[in-house]
Image (cartoon, rainbow, N blue to C red; front, side, top):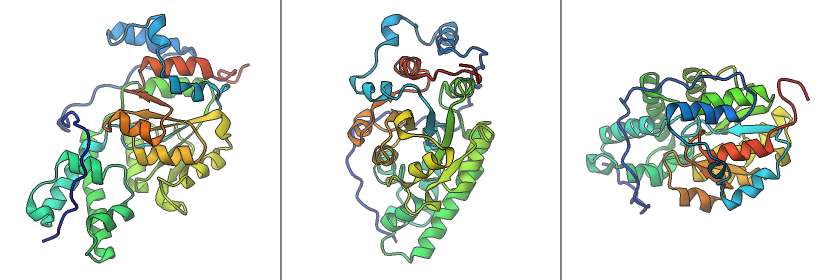
Length: 299
């Protein structure tokens, strides 16, 4: 039997929703290049009331973002940022760890997953979860887990609310962009395909294909280089402390999505702004302030 690592205490969090819940339809795209299209669409759906006070309700730390104007590029993590994939990863880990007798066969909890697994790079996870196991064998477990994730994802993966509207806005303003992830390339390409974003990102940077993966800055520095963007006019969307630390170390402000991880954890890691999803009024206000001077190639 394998001995588990003791779960680190973390703040109380809401339970994971069932991963079998049907995915909502992606938001409709608008032809408008104004950030106002988010508010109009959301008012129609009754989800937010777009008032001037709500639009300006940004965190004090968001000042680091407004200094980026005119915005040149946005970099995105994938897992937990573009899509709510953690429930799928959790179920895959829980099932396979139980099969090999981890924790004496007692299923891992969401708290254990959040504290010890979520956001980690597979090579590091193999060493921390299985310190007494041959590393090649431990990595084979990780490969099996990723294969299970790819099997489950097509029926379960869903975009974070507001993602498709945001992508349309980015295209309308000709912003440079890249996806930057610690996920294996096969997983990353599958998720982008399922989200309909394979053609949206001209650059996909994989942590394991860099000298160092997140939380080191290497993946984000590589992305900036490949798309020819300045960190002075770029920001990052991330959902994990590891990813936020990587972005901060690269000298780029980071917007943290509280998809699964507690806001305090993300703030402590250095996030400049916390948002619930891509429809959050705080984000929309910041985008209005930093939007580039061009739209559809016209000044």
